[in-house]
Image (cartoon, helix red, strand yellow):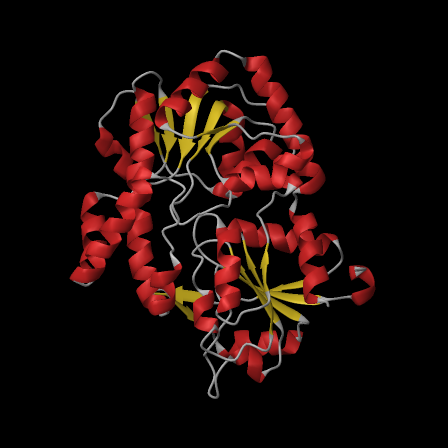
Amino acid sequence: MNANQKKLKIAIFPSYGHVLPFIVDCIGKALEEISITVHYVNYSIINGEYIFTTETLQDLIDFAPDFAFFLGQNGYLDIEEGGHFLHIHKIPYAAFLFDFPLRPLVLANHRNEYLKALFVWDREYISLFQSLGIKQTHYLPLATLPSYFDQPRSEEQIYQVSFIGAIIDDNSLKAHQNKLPPGLREQADILIKSKTKNNNFNICIPEIITNKNNENYLRDFFGYINARHSSYYRKNLIYHISRNHIVDVFGNKEWLATDNRSIRVHPTINYKKDIFSIYHQSKINLNFSASQLASSINQRVFDCFASNSFLLTDDKSDLDYLFAQDDIRIPSFSSRSDLLDKINYFLTHENERNEISQTIKNVIIKKHTWLHRMEQVLDIIMK
């Protein structure tokens, strides 16, 4: 597709969180790089609800986009009398599910003829969504933006092992749990135990999803499971490493409750502004995937190696799916003992760390940037 000749106009609905706004920025810049006109829709979020002003909606109508893009949202906008806003105004749209993977279920209950494509970063969910009637579901892994991360290293490596991420305190987890009816609490505990025994266990099992396809139910139920297991998983691994090494953790104040001299707690960082420096200043960066991920790898894997920094990540099947064809093996671990063994090894093999990082960086810059992903997206939605 020659985007310059098409002179496409795309409206992007921003999202919220720590990483999704950064991905919105990356996608917008990649589209502008191929001369597509991008309009960022302006709206507010109050108590988790999206608030659109009359002026904002009129600006969108006046922009007359060829497509609208949604990140982390299903694209269903019931904000105008008569139903789905995009259907009323005949605006084709694409939804990118790069976080909570179950929002498309709402679309299965409504007309979605203007949904050109649903892109999911986890291959596990493609057959599920297609079976629910969303046939236009496609796999789209995450990527990197070289203009942010492909820069010379200037900082000294002052951290041996670092981790970036938050945990949830016990009181908040209890409050989250209390939102669920007793029967669902028991069901959640069963899934959490299964996930704890096998980190590759998929908590979003179809039997539960298809029986209760209500977004609020799914958000509360799986949100609790993800929060509880992710906090346990992160603390368990960091504690284990701290028996042998100093670990620098960049996260929220809840980490201070660990009261462990081997865990040095730093304030939460801004993903766009600060994360590049942390990558460069760390001999080993750690990546622990969120609990709802079944097969996919997250943003950190692409960005860290794109910055020519070294990373150890938990094993996911997409590591092979995306990189095996280039004879690349992303450094990964399968257990606590395997993680510690590899930290011990790589801390004493600097040249090997640097060679691995450079090799993986070359492949990511060549094949896994947001420009590559947007070219793939445009090929699909333009058909």
